[in-house]
Image 1: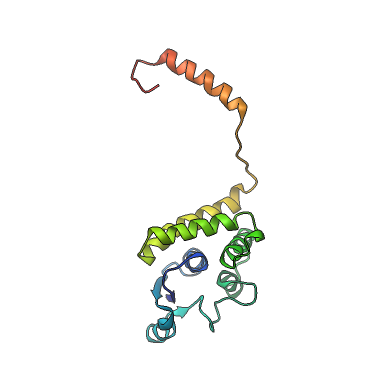
Image 2: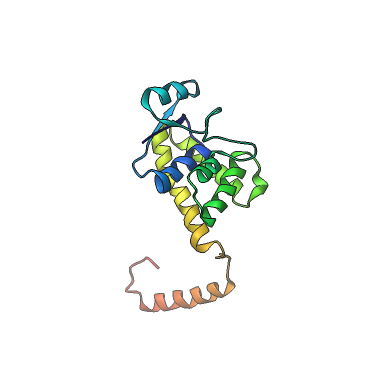
Length: 171
């Protein structure tokens, strides 16, 4: 199936294709066109328009297009619901919605500066959403912090390494 939206995707217009490709339509083809051409291209190609005014799969009130997809396709997954909050906060400039919103916004804007090709940007953006979804599913309670004990353990490791090194110059 074909899906069409505005060119130069950012938060919601990367999150929605990720959601489509991962949970709705494994054979999805994404079209990115100038905003004024979305309706025409949708009619000509039979593509489903999203994240544009006046279509079913778009913003409604405080919710963004990602939310509309989750509702329409009955995607009941706590991790997707949590991801929707992050996407919504980043996409609607409500960065206080979840601690990750500002980071997603920063990464999304950075990706848009790195890639001129929308599909290339989408490919890299999918990695971001895959990582966020994996974190939400499997490791959201995991913490990472500096551990002074690691310093002591690393020192012992370095001493052993030096003692057993054949003199490669890499220690």
